[in-house]
Picture (cartoon, rainbow, N blue to C red):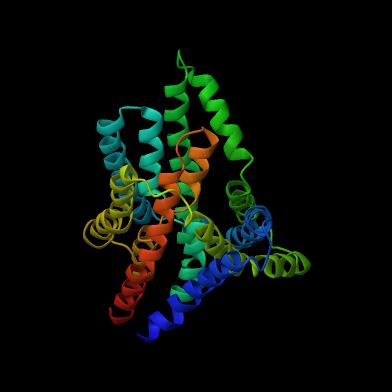
Length: 315
């Protein structure tokens, strides 16, 4: 219980604070967009850059973690994709649904939780998880959608579009920039280290408050009966199926150090991130299902993630 109070309660408390701020209109209508931009373009990239600049390649590369976390994500995406494909038949919708079931909120929620639960040693695992979701999963989903929307599939055009989208993403660029410093053995100057520490310190609280504000807006989404089955499927796959597959791979298949195995499981058990919602809006598809699934999975994760952290403390 002490582990749950110490690790989970502050994280979910900040999410609730953001929810309250939005419901009470304490920060104004533009606050959510401003907070999101601050976290995505400044604070979180500072954390990722500094973390990657201070670790070695051996600390970052862990094939077992890639197999456990990546395997759980791939299995979840594939199952959700196939289930939606049989219902609606459109590749675009199936791709967004697949991403929704497999996309953990690793950056906004995973980093604060792992830092509190496991300490700074878990940051490499979070970075790898973020790169897998923000690059590999995003690229696959966009590639499928672009192919589906083109009368005559043009792989060169699709690859170029995906590459440009990833290059413009600061959450992808910043860790690779940090890796370059580490690869060349360049130590961060003291002023740069202090700068990124100050800026990165705002990432976790601002990200969690932004999640709460987003949930407050999502709570007003339409509740049509036809949405219930799709939302339930996404939430079940995200909070039950993906952690179960990841746990099997992390503890039974791959020989992972404890902190990597626990990080893989915790990151896979996180609620759905905002990526699927953004993708649905980008391509003009129905975003209400993604919005509702994010809301419900985040609310339920208060229980599931707390139980998981409590389980970690007794192992």
